[in-house]
Image 1 (cartoon, rainbow, N blue to C red):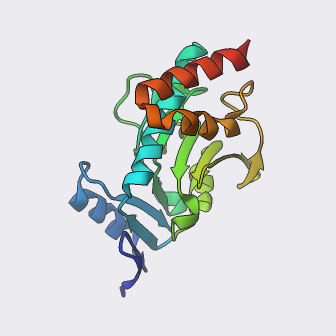
Image 2: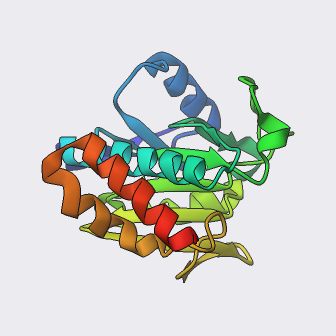
Length: 211
């Protein structure tokens, strides 16, 4: 099988005509302890190395989700950049972060998750979606993630999976009482004062909206 390569930028590469077995072999060769993120859709594979800005917002928004859940006393599991894949749908993706809320009872404490028998995460986070060469929305749809949060250039947008496609929404399915698109503003207003200040501000913001 012929593999075609297109290098779009210094921090990413696209590979075409990649079989599922080649995708699985590449994941095994790269190992779990790596910086690169991978997405696969029906033979097209993207390998991306995140920038410091990307990692900052990935971590900061991920921690904010932790803090919000704890303030609201919601049980959850944070599954980080787990490689979610479904061979039957030729789809695989590593989100910037992902969480289980509604299905937490089905996966609590487990380390052997498999989409052939377990539910996908309820919420996935993607950073800098417009800069990624491979559209991840169809991949998440094939995997069945109900809700996506996409941060890009200071905006945080919410998408719900409806009839196999993602539709932009104003309210989160996980946190319906919070105005989630305001979260980047809370972060930016406190970014210069450090992470602890951001976390305190996010928790205060959550308490005010929840009352």
